[in-house]
Image (cartoon, rainbow, N blue to C red; front, side, top):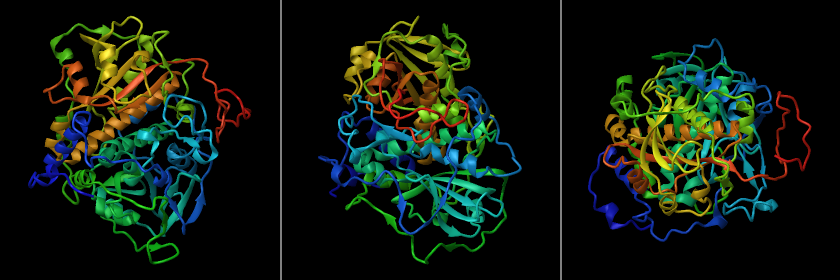
Length: 566
């Protein structure tokens, strides 16, 4: 692949400079094309959506979500932002099946919409499958692994979650938890690890891929948080760790596939002293064979460079005080700007619980209708849910957490009681601070795709972050960690909207520079990161029920048959 002169002539750059240069290119991509110029997606040679080991012994998992308590989204978010509890034991297989199942297949999509795959999805060889967690472009590049110790729910070893078959591939035997503990600074008897296989997304998005897939990690993490919170198990995922050491345990190369998040489960202690026991790969001494559908796998220089810049190896983890650098300030709170108070965002009796929200989650491609207007109570519910998700803890920003790394703005088009205007959401005061008038036609001009008419969307929620400040505090790792939190915000919005039967869709196709001008934040250090579309869908929305798992609302097998309306 040829390299544009612009890349070769930059000279030596620090990791922080590489991350900020990459981010700038992503935000400018509607103005300055990304390399490689002239790139064409080879749909005939696309990778599989599933990583399949051809020589691993499979362990079946219980049906996902069957045993989940009927906990609402609001209650789960409250528990998820609590400090991590030192639970006496690790989750059982039923809980793990639901957690891992958040990335598994739950049914088939057949309902027509405006997305570009609508005409093909009714063909058996081009079926589009539903999953509980959102993914940019529907590529699903994340992979999930379990590293099980001597007190785990499975024999000690390393396991990969097979999303196609809802089962575990046993990759090695022996307790490798000591190696993960040394790489993360947290000792536990069970770890869940999220990796990214870049090609699963990059075949479509090329140099834009890293910006997308890091948010995908956050979306999966949000699903895990809510499932485990429903089981009274708050998480404190590790974002700062030695990737090479963790990758060695999982037998991934760190380039084509790399670990991004490590989640200790069960009782955990800091400053581990345990040493890993020897492990044996199941079946052979050579690397496991993984089926690759693409005949040609490519990497892209911008992606490889920013990924390498974000690696931290064995560098010490910055203290919690560094997290304050990323706090999104709310000038309205300090200055006493007039506040338009939103109705109490309390859960309602008809809201779906976590399980049913996950199983019902979908994207409203081309299905929005500006009439009737969105109720301000529903808008406040989604905004508050996203804000609660932003207060969940990690190793670099432990709970209880006051300083969120993401803020929210609202571009109101059809919300009852709100003018067509830009508003800033003040989570602390539960309301909106009004800004400039909104030209919805101008907003449509800023959207690069054709799968939505923004004039039919009730509101656009803009999730923002202080990227430069976080990169200054954490180096290039700050970009990666912020993107994970942005993806977490997106999934929280999806599930909160789904719980209330609202239409929802996350997009990255809006011009960041143009939106920042609309918000009035250009030059402030705050930047738009992702855009959530909200509103009502056109009714009725008809479709066949191709669900793989059915419930009656109380956790019992449902009676719905083929052809029922969803």
